[in-house]
Image 1 (cartoon, rainbow, N blue to C red):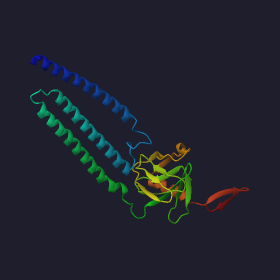
Image 2 (image 1 turned 90 degrees about the horizontal axis):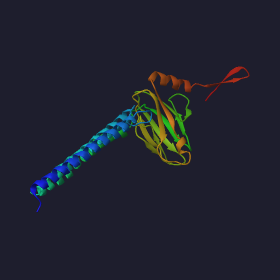
Image 3 (image 1 turned 90 degrees about the vertical axis):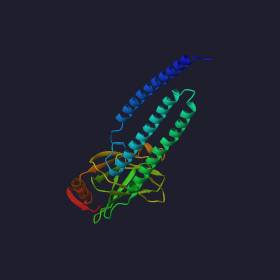
Image 4 (image 1 turned 45 degrees about the vertical axis):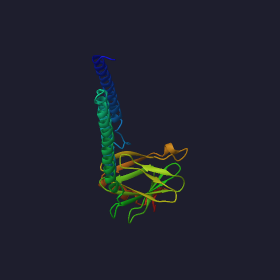
Length: 262
């Protein structure tokens, strides 16, 4: 029969070991979090939002991170609590641990689900009437961007998109070959381009600057080359650029300027 004092010594030693392990884990988590957050900025980061949709997606990420941290912390506290149980109260404490271990994650996950569903209608809502529309075609392996401004000639760009700040823009996404996925992380979510279908995506930039877009779906041997720039301009700069792109092309022939339609 073991001496009570010896059993109490073992319990205290176990608790001390658990606390030391938790301290090391806490330090590693903080270190990894600091390193990870240092890589969150840049021209291709969902956590450096420059659009309304990206801001909502980033907010959901942070709430999910907080929820995961809360569940982890709760489980660690329960683990420490369990190591301190003595024989007389072990059964009662085990019941409490099981109850809290089931209730806490359920409440947190239900809250995150409700918050995510609350954001969904805002992310897929159709744009207002009169919104600028841009047709994007996923080629092998580049992006064809076609502007069709009202009352002006249409024109095309390759691997470049220009957008006005503080204005919604609707993208009509086409593919005639394989499945692509159009994504500008700093401005919003991604949508697939599926042959035979036209999918839609609305982005609403909130900051000017140059942001990197990419194809988020492996589409063949040239997939890695399907990067492009999304340049967000002020409203005045964008509409001036749009007017210049729609002007007739001037070609120099034998020392004379000859005007031709695009």
